Image (tube, rainbow, N blue to C red):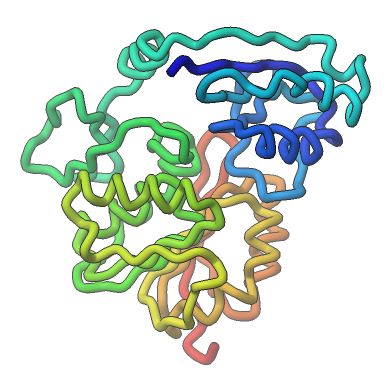
Length: 294
């Protein structure tokens, strides 16, 4: 089965409509990028990306519906899709592209993320096997790197961890490989939960990973909570995140631009005691401890 790639530019205010139509048409994946190619990280349903104009890239297994473009034009206007491009994406080329550019990466002192086609640079280190897939999270983005560095610096032996917005499962699996006894991964995308389970199997930790859709989440007394989403979503989720963490438990939040950090800190200020931020490439990791009286 061949893969079809559709690409066009769009005003960001039209993204929710375009996304809904593309999903209804059976798109395998939908990416929002700026003209320079920077991806938006797992935007929440109904939210717009960060730019006024975005480049939309959608992949289909086989031919998309014949009336897809006309359906989009009826909703968005003919001019909105003037940059429309459609073509066959060769699977061999796609695979070769990531294999050529995705290399082992170290986080902290002893954690490596290693693609399956390469040997670990340090076989005795903690090596997490992961290949790029449809769910976000391979360690290459600054927010994921910040979270991995933070997790590697914690004493996770025997701990319980919640990874809220688990995506590919990279943070959950890293926590398990670093010694966590049990990790609970949460995501609203069934494809992300499937990817997390498959990646956990590849790393031999699936028996210690519990995966939930948001409506399945139960109150916990976890030792560590990590969430790499987006600032607006984190603020909205604050009431749901609080019951998951034991008093004194560790909190790590990312997916936050520097200019958004104060708003996120303020939203959690009544139950998190913040420590100095970590930052990388304009993104921030907020971390601290849950108040013992929360």
